[in-house]
Length: 133
Image (tube, rainbow, N blue to C red; front, side, top):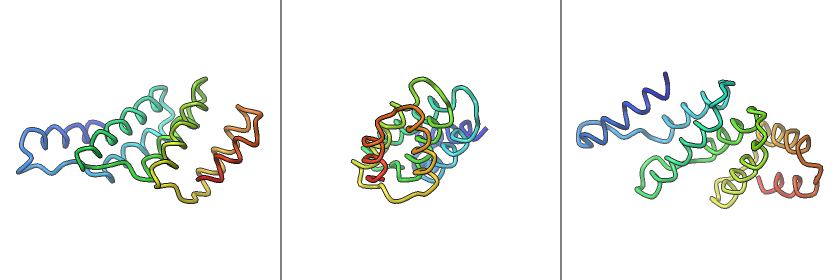
């Protein structure tokens, strides 16, 4: 339901930006959080799609992704257990660091450390990535 509300708000703004406000970062983050913790099979792809939309929005100076956006995107991949989850989570971590938005987040660091250690025995690489967060 949260995704439908976001689509509705975005569509209304696109039709008449003078009357309808654009969806802001906190609205996107609410939907990203819902996907991150939903457990649905499509959750990581939906979260990734929303993050990609936020990056496009940032180019237009509307609702850019923030640290929370990336956190939820990473958690969606981590919780998915998918074969490609580790690579996708790493990519989002790298984007988060490159964006300059990274800051210590105990929940994210703990879950990501356990997840990546389980998936990849290269602990030095994992430790280096975690230290950047």
